[in-house]
Image (tube, rainbow, N blue to C red; front, side, top):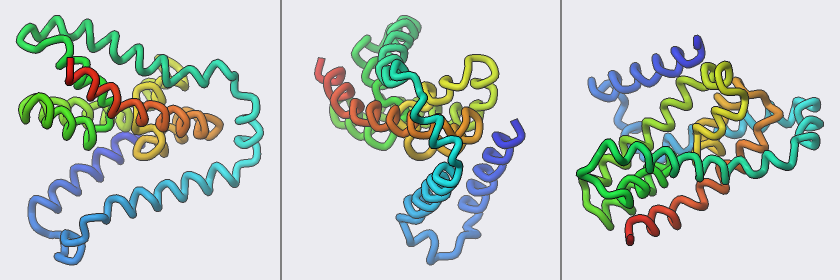
Length: 201
C-alpha cells in the first residue's frame, strides 16, 4: 500500500508541476521524455531480474498452463464487459466490447474507436483504459492479497510488459516477470484486431 501511495504522490506532484508551468521549456519541448523514462525503468527491471539467479531458475518451473493466462484475461474481460453493458442501454454491446478490447492500451484503442465510432466513445475508451492501468498500479498489493499473484498480471492487460511491469515484479515476485511480459505481448497484439472487429459490427 505504501508503494501505491508513493506512485500516486508522484503522479499528483507531476500534474501540479505541469499545471503551474514549473517545468523548464527544454523538458516540455521534448515529447519523447516519457518513452525514455520508461526505457530506463525497463532496463532496471531487467537488470534486477537478470541479477536474481533464483528468479531465473524459477522461470523454468512455471506451470505451462499459465501460458493460457492471456486467453483467460481476454475472455474474462470481454465477459465482464458484456455484463456491464446492460447497465448502459444507450450503448450497443459492440460499443462496450470495443472499449473493453483496449485492455489498458489506451493510446491505440481510443484512436481506433474515435475513427470508427466517434470522439465520444473514443474518449470513453481512453478514460476506461487509463483507469485499468491506474487500478493495476495502485491496487496491485491488494489484488495479490485477495486474489493471488496472477491477479495484477490479468488486471494489467496489455500494459504488463511495460508500464505495470515494475509493480508486478514488486508485488507478484520476480519469477512472474517473464510470464508478465509474455502476457502483455499477446494481449497487446490482440488489441487492434479485436477493437477493429467490434467497431465494424
